[in-house]
Amino acid sequence: MLKLGLNPYGLTWHLGLQGRGTPRTNPNGTGLEGLIAIAEEIEAEAIEIFDPWLAAMSDDELARLSDRLKSLGMTPIVSAGLDMMGPIESALRSAKALDAKVIRLGLSPVLEGSRNAWGGKWGALNASIRAGLGKYAPMAADQGRVLAIENHQDFTSRELVAFCEEFGPGLGITFDMGNTFPVLEAPLDFTRIVAPYVKHAHLKDYRVQATDEGYRLVRCAIGDGAVPFVEMMRILLAHNPDLTAVLEPGALEARHIRFHSPDWWQGYAPKSAPELAACLAAACRNRLGPDEDYRTPWERGDDAALETYELDMIRRSAANIRALGLDRLETAQ
Image (cartoon, rainbow, N blue to C red; front, top):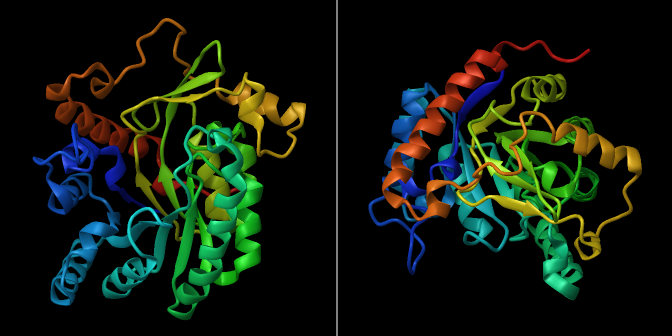
């Protein structure tokens, strides 16, 4: 049975993970307690927790948190990043304490599919990632856990699968269901390729806005955008009927995929015309008009509106997902 839940990244202002100034955090954020409170409100069955919060806890505090999550009926997932959110050893410690079987793992800081922004450093970044996976995937496997690498607007479906096949049972995939568009793959095409390896999912949606440079991916409530969640989830559940999937509206900044520029394509394998056509066709669903204002309150500098904006979007997302009946789906044949 699919377990639906929540992660922190659609509530970065409310939780304190994003703010103005230095450091870029909101000192009035509600942190882990705020995340748990919203998870309880939407009756979450899974919760993905930012590991730096957990790293600051003592063993006794982690034990009490583990008992609390069990009493709430929430399956924990630890959220970490390779060389981005502290040492992976910390995430492994947290996962052991919470009895979390899956560690979501971001691989790189690349966004918008923009490998060319790294210039000649993309190859070195790739080599560093492979070295890290080679070191930590066996450690996770030895503990009976999985590092679930995320398609964080950086890697294609086939590249993620290649990592999994190379590094063995300690590696799986966290499938961000909105992040097929940044690497110009159609949602259903991407899903069919990665499905056998998916251990966890992020329910993210975008409204797509055509621009002179490519298209812009604009945050929206899950279910209001271009992502065909029902069709994708049927495919995923056929391979993993016990999947966890958490709500994660997109970032407070729109993502601009500038694929009209030849430079954008640096670092990618050739793509066939039918593959690209499928992606562009999928992006037309519920699209945003070219002259519509895509900006969030963050982008407009309206910080006073951010709290309500984030919370309303999470609540609408939870209602949309229930209306779609994701927890009642039959798997694909």
